[in-house]
Length: 252
Image (cartoon, rainbow, N blue to C red):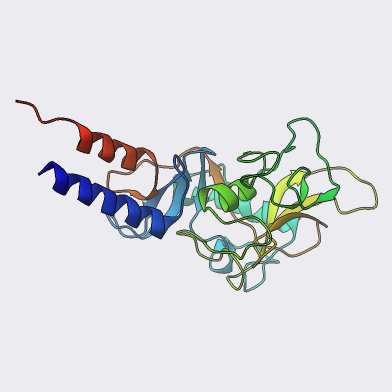
């Protein structure tokens, strides 16, 4: 019996690791199913960043909340994005009223560095937060952390592999560039950030307010805990718990 349990546990572990490709202790928990009790989740709670991501990264393509200036694909200027989020909050979308753009803070935890780097050691360029870099696993850039750590995509120059449970994330899937919330003052220069999920060089970049990009809405904390089974993209702790249980000796 113990051998059967161990084989089943090993098989399940390998299946989850191969299918989900998410590092240990990273989890996206399904929230706000469109069908009561279903698994057609409209949002996912990120247990590491403690924010809730909209499942559709280009929700504005189908739900403008009456805000003008949004393209059919859901692209908009930075100012329009804030108007859209304001309307979203006024409507208490999915029960939340603090929807915002993803945040970006200095990856070095001191000051924003807008010089370009492909080593992940500044706030503009490639591989920010990626494993094997100076600030590996940093949560300073929320979209970069999701891309490289939670979704487990490899750093440059490897090819994009995983959009997880989200829609309109990654090359060929809606707006390639998504706005960050952070603004910084540099007269005469682009003073905003965006993240691009491209085939081989996903990166943080500088943009102007008038550019039209995607607006991926996120909400602080967990918008709504739902009964199990709500965990569709959970790794690490569940597997560890199952394996520990499989090793536990049978009581006499």
